[in-house]
Length: 482
Image (cartoon, rainbow, N blue to C red; front, side, top):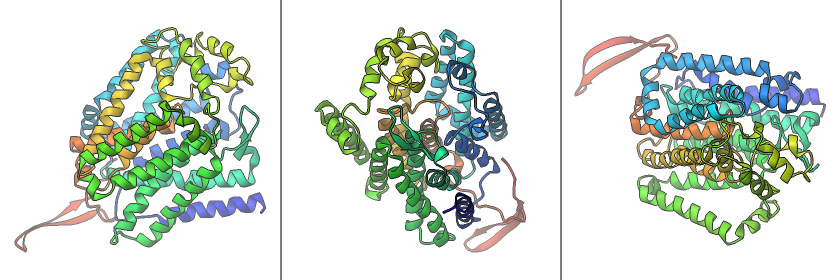
């Protein structure tokens, strides 16, 4: 098929997905487009890259970045902060409930002071605020579950079909090569692991939404919405195979099974059973690693027994950290003098000085940048997020097991990928899961009592009745709050 014709068909298909999935029974904030646009960018490529004005590779790029991208992120962050200031009380409730995350971000800011390039680290910290700001825009929406559902599909409707288009018809954009010279499918992203991650988070969200539609026979426009949402889930499953990211395939199987199991009433209402299931997953994974079963698992997923070179990277980067307690500073290890030790150790690798810029393990990456203090803070976020997600299960059936699923999935995802990096898809979804679970327990009114949307005309008739007798009737004007 001609690439131009394929592009037209893809654009029509994307528009069709949006049309089929429309739902006028709920009203979410227009501000939801801010995190959607943000994920369109961090879930694909930078704006400068799409426009063909990205700077050349090298250390100067790591230090200075792209002025265009900085402006785009700055505008999005400023807009998100304005929305959060407008929402005032709701935001304060969420911030108080998520004190471990606040402590983590505060420590990241303090660590800027001992970074080798403090100015660069501070700019990266400012940029990292976009992650929590976008999460709060979604979580503090008047209808947080509906907001997240729309967020998932607005992101997925664009990125997933576009990835298939680029892979099949625009090979110079949608395909590439690994540092070993092997071909890989990248889609809208820059490497197969990034594509697999985007597909993973969208597919888990789509599975959650499709299951809700299947169980809710009275859902408005159920048929056409199932077509759109089921279509994206099918795209996701197919792209997981096309991307060839073994970590994301394993995480989708784990997350999907965990979500379906914990969505059962018998599990949801019994926290002890959820804890037992979580413990079983940890024990099975731990025993496999300790007994050498990781090699068999790696081969089954298409990896080498050394996890495609990751063990060599881990062996090289851990001793290279010269300050194990506090680390090199926020996202500063790979621009510090310590990184020269890594390059010398791995000097036999192809172009390692430019091809390697992460530890391929989230916990080790945190250790390199923030030391053992940072690792402890990340563990605190995980533990509190997990416990609160379990407690939130019976309190918010609409959100259900999705926050818990993301928390556990990213616990394992970070074993072989650096998922705690700022402006990263994995980090944003983990923050959303933790913040949302904490918000449910904090009593965010939108979680327990969804608001009845007003008609488009702007008025809603409200009546008060006792024993069937109407006592009063009034007209309430719908608010267009952000």
